[in-house]
Length: 372
Image (cartoon, rainbow, N blue to C red):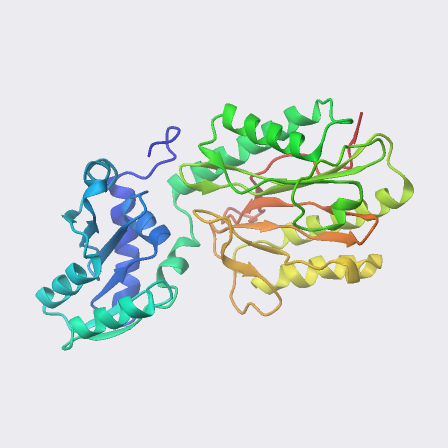
């Protein structure tokens, strides 16, 4: 599957990714890895189909496995690797492990079924086969140039679509109609798909963090919360804005101001080398000082890339630090049941440039807009 110029990985990009994962395997004392999680297979090979696997050696070489339905697709999407066409991915993977003569291998046990894992272990009795953990997922947290380009384009399309939607009219239309309108705008602007089902909520429905659009008619004075994103070359944008239809009242202004301050503070500490947990502490502290923390009931943010929710997840319990070229969301909110809620969310790139100011990819105002 192709995308806009510079947003799809080439042969060299994919080879670099495989070598980087291979180096992590070597460091862990493993000779190779059986990759069966489809999103990880895509990251390392370029394959976008629904059935594939990769037998990866620690030197970065490997063999790609898929079935006959994807013979031609694999020829186009998977460069630089030997291809084996088979229905028996596990069986052929075992044959290749045995043929390598190497005895210390890892497998993505978090993605294999119990039966498939048992069959693989049984087929390689002379091999020590251990769980890989989230080795490939960890590698995916640091985005290369092609990935950043895809994310930038997905975010650009997303924000342009929302600005077009805000031009109206909105009052008198249903949540469902407005949500579909926004999704169509993203497709018209070049998205290959929407990143996820759009969350569009109005009035008291904005108090539900993951509200599904209904036939409720948008009314003057409503809060309108939109959580949405475009997908480009497999990469997801994630953005939320909350506006008011008409003139905002004092309560809406107060809540929006608290969320905006929390979100800005959280984004500001998404810097290389800083603890992941720090942004959680800072953003929650702003909501606590404003007296609204008890109404923040969701997670604060997560990695975003080939999956809409991926590592790292922002939480007080996260023990790691932020690396340059990691992309995350920052999305505090206040949700008051029966009354309404506000969430502001951006997709943010951690940079290494001095002084390391985070780059907001969803470049769209966070001010409280009053839309006619």
